[in-house]
Figure: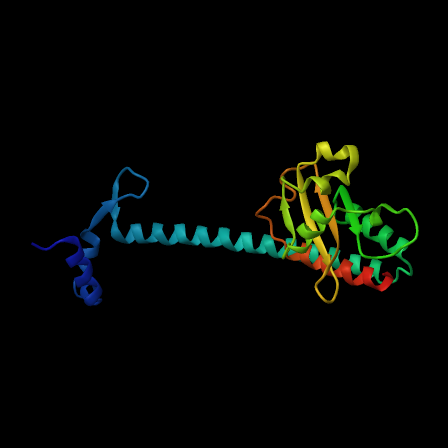
Length: 217
């Protein structure tokens, strides 16, 4: 007895079948995909093509949106680079960094720590960090985002730490890939730096900042 697989195989092996029996297409009715009446097979094909077209349109709109978002981030990175390049000394560099993160990238909270450099003054950026944190930063191959940040990193934000719901930890490295510090971005919005977010631009931010700081250190 012929089963469905035999029919499928026969039609695949004989693509001219419906050309020879063209009138058969007009006589075949199949269930409507959304229920109700039966429809001709040709109409069912049209509905399938329409559904595929809508799906492709949605994918295209999504790709366009991602492209526009990436273009916008790229422009912000460019402006940050232009702000950091002319900074003549470390204090001006840090001011430009914090300003652009806050005003251009809309990052409400940012904290930076740099270690392994002898710099005079009591700037928070050069406050001591634990050996445990240094090892943690050294082990990061790329920026990390999420709600569960290293407790020591959260302590850099003082009383604000209790309100933070998402954090991005960006390791800073020198030319030899040794870790020289950490930039931490934080927000009260749990969806701002969620674990699945792409970290490409965060990585580039870390590389840009590292190269800039090394000029002064």
